[in-house]
Image 1 (cartoon, rainbow, N blue to C red):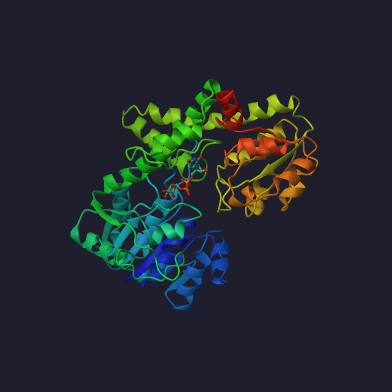
Image 2: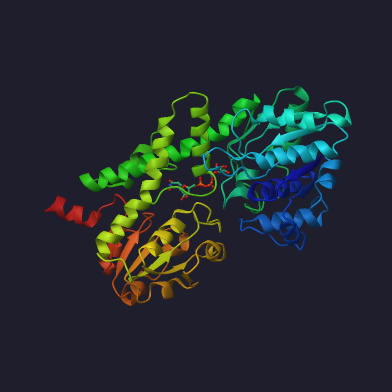
Length: 461
Ligand code: UGA
């Protein structure tokens, strides 16, 4: 099918490239001229595992093109995916101005019937407004050309390509049969496994079949916000448990591991630590909460989730102050800047906020990250960035582990311990073993996990 993708950010690039890999003809557009120039030069403006290969194959096969001309992208398309950003406004509500702009642009250039699909995360009832905007601005062309659908994405940054090809569920919110038919056609290659999988070679493992859910547009919109908010809620719950464990001597990992074995709870998103960040969970929880408020529904639960999450950074700072006594002029090394591993995204990253707080307290910060240094540099003036984690640790009074990159587990911690001015390690992602780190000579702290070897001694004594 001929498809247009409007917006070449994380969602648009993954969606456009993967749908082209699945056999569709995709023209993607963005109003950021530099971004399109980068893409046309065959480079990716973001770091996303496996996406470069998918994009390269699709471009080589002539099924994926990039243009700055929205009319060119929309003109021949039978279906248009809107993948533009919906950042938070001061009030916490989603800013839908980019969606409104795109609707006007689509309406201005459309001369044949089209399905317009909301892929961007939007509050419930946006579909209705979108349809209205399309038809109002497209009235001069004569007739209502537009059908609207919602097709929320559940892609995680860092594993987005794998998630696209192997989704748990595909949700489509539609209001007519033709839209449902078209969306089934668009996703048929994914459902039938007809694509070259960049994640699994030589073949994809047999997994659970993907559920294809057809709902109303409002339900589809709600499903997205409800899912992200619930994930944030789970993390916040684990974080409060970690605090309780610290006071009562329990181990949050033992507690959440056992909880997660109950299939009604599930093991994922129960890792306690510095809390959630990124461009999705924090803003979606806020927007969902504001939406509920606006419609007279009390969703204090989400307000608390937000509050608990923000407090994680205060709690880490308290640990730093308690351990260092005076923070001013102390050399502090930071491992990890991205909001989570396997991405260079630093938007709403807890690590960035921690560095800002350290700067405000006049600490001397040196920071590293396997891929996010460039993006962090743009938002953290006055910080020394060093690629080599050993150099970040050398001579430091404290080392803070803020993003759980797998490679940090493999570091030569013995060497790091020796080279620090004071071997103080605060593992804000509960990544390393307290017993092992203490055995190496670190003053080690984390969230809600006592040193089990100490407990064993107590139990056996
Ligand atoms: C999230 C959702 O997981 C996706 O399903 C959704 O499609 C996406 O938002 C979106 O709306 O586009 P993402 O923002 O990539 O994906 O990040 P997550 O993997 O959900 O992680 C979010 C944050 O939670 C990270 O900062 C991570 O470190 C933190 N986290 C995650 C924890 O603190 N504990 C956990 O147990 C899990």
